[in-house]
Image (cartoon, rainbow, N blue to C red; front, top):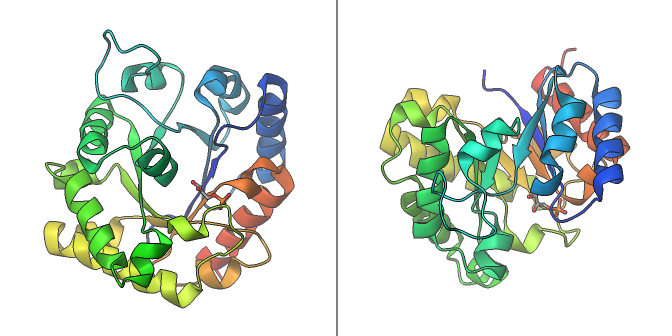
Length: 257
Ligand code: 13P
């Protein structure tokens, strides 16, 4: 059975004290979860949060990285720096970076390869805009993102990849995708992986959903066969809501428990 994975993307929120407090509250409330849990604070607070989550089941992740190890790249952070700061994960290809900062599939692809090579696990985000969905292009867009960002990633490296389907129209809007619509795209993504890497890789790959996930709406979504947890924005900034989402994922992972 694939692991379910709940990750908080704190985006550009929190100051040092609130980041530390939020991490401590997540550690305390989540306890020893039956699913995998991670938090991705702003990079400037990674070491602060690393001190709080060290030795706990909560994994640390970053929201972005560069593709070079080091060099004259003012303002950038390398995969090696993230590892040194205590990160296990890095989010790449988030739609806010694709659309607000013009990141291309080719650029994201270089980062995916570098992060995997460095030993990070990559959470690669995919998803269409509302216009693309209306134009019946959603699958074509996700197909293009998968081909562009995973080129040259072999089956071994794929074991360190998590995909996150985040329809752009669902992010921060309160409009979580309908479980059946999300499931359809997740099944498409898993089919794509099966076509390129084979059945075993497809069955093993976790595919998260992201976009307006809140505890009151997410139970049916997490019960879909190809949805393996969530990448949580707004609700991850409140430990109580984030923990409630973790509990729902645990319930969906082992309904008899
Ligand atoms: P919201 O949960 O705030 O919609 O954000 C989702 C997201 O972008 C996670 O990466």
